[in-house]
Length: 435
Image (cartoon, rainbow, N blue to C red; front, top):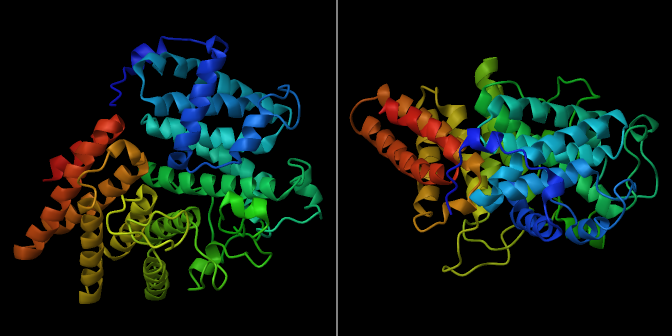
């Protein structure tokens, strides 16, 4: 269902969260849980639902700001015009409770999760400056609480640093450890995506020249069930730095997770984008290109239905896995960004291969319900389309025509996804003006 919203009408409807009936609250939470992957969010669903019955002030209950943010995003994902009026009140309540959580240093993990969801909501509504400011809040709090330097995927009974424990108590068990790892990488991915759209610096960085206190060393995320069953290892410590050392992100024989691949993809896209600003050396380009190629070589097929890695092998008639669509697109866009200005034949070949890869992915989406796709995919398509039309404008003959045709395919896909996410209409019009 397409939601043709009126921002003015929504802003004038101040329906409070307390006006939501218990049944509607349950429905909205259910809608959110079904769609949580689209905002890169994960948590132990059973534990969360059980905690809702606790008094709001109980330290094991979710902070009201997280509940409000979940209801807010649930309203958004419902696509129901009849629920649009609740969004304004829920957004105000989530922000008010966010402030309360901060001032009382109360359940700051929930503070970060709620802030991530509010940033995601702003982003989906096309409120990009607000999204950028909100994700900055998330990232700063994540670093303050030490979520950027969780030492291992495996939980132990030993506590963390006294400095971090002042803000966020040591996790009580392995599930809570896994949830914090997922929260960090949600903030990381949203930070990279939003920063690229607004053309501003990201807040969570990684690299050898950074202050050691700011280095990202939190392991790539595993499935929450891995933490719950204890199948994570203390050796699961690979993070951003290892991505550029061509080291496999998992242990030998260990399957990748799609959450991990997505996080790696965003790290590569942002690295390629930031190198264009920093005037990179040939060695920096070579290292990044090698990392992209290694990453691409490990990606599962678009029709893989498994939650992690290349298995189980899926038959040819399996439906497209939308999460893998985004991951493949991240890899191709990273390569396209890195090589777009290259004058040598090798760079041109890499650009061509990346463009063909994006076109091939879009070609698999002919019968797709675009409401299953995430808005960030549309922004990646815009980035690719802009580069291809720029290349076409400076080329002649078959090269110009080829790049233009690929861009037209991207524009066609943007038209469809902008029907689901109206703010993408702005990017669509920009590409159409470049034709």
